Image (cartoon, rainbow, N blue to C red; front, side):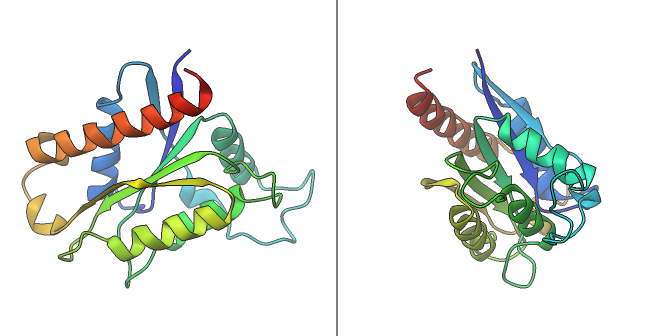
Length: 187
């Protein structure tokens, strides 16, 4: 049985470098792993406890929760917006965190990576994502990190999947994530 990894991208922009990085990860999935790029974060309403009532949870939130619950691990790709995590990714974490203590992220291994224009590659946003998903119950793998700086210039004419250094780094991240999941699941 293959390890199921759900990838969420914090940028909704069609030409997003983080989306390109996630698409690269899908192609580089190690043997024994299947990475699914989640579509639909834009359709999920902002988390509101008034909406989170059994039998009335919005369908896009139900779909996200089901996809996360069915996965063995989560892989977040985040840009940095004003020094922090994009709202769409934070909203996804909020929906996946409920019900508290038994949400779809509870005890799931989670790795966070990404690229951003700044010289640190979105480290602040990645740290905020790790913090939020850890509080939500995810098991953040702090030893797996990848921040790629200068996205606007580095990927202006080169897709991340065509950058040998990026391919090597993403491959290493995926192998390590797969190893963590396999070790905890007895795969």
